[in-house]
Image (cartoon, rainbow, N blue to C red; front, side):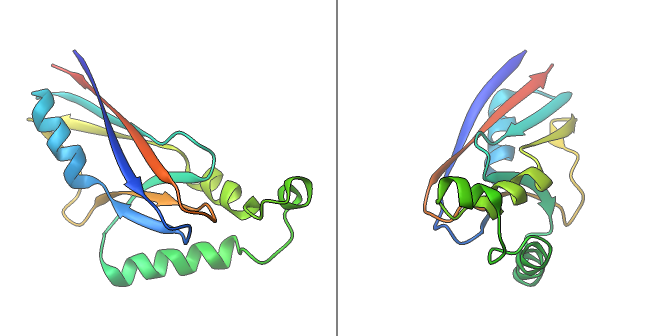
Length: 138
């Protein structure tokens, strides 16, 4: 059985990080899948998905680490070609990746105690982000 759902979040254009774990859990419950997998995918080339403890300090640490590794204020060829100033956004999203796979056992995602699923929007302008969720199994 395959069930497909959507999660939407409105971003501000300032490296927004959203906890989408509760929405995933709600969709999993609605699917009635007991054994299988949850796959989440964010369309677009300036956002990504990962897991982390969704706690203010570590979320700030993540934002700062991303800025140190892939800063906004350096030259990106994409910006020179297109002039939209979001070259850093594309590189950040590529490094994080657009999707996650989470095994489901006994009707529960197999996340760790302090592990949440987060959507990271790296673009430099507000957007409405869509996460496609497919839950498969029995």
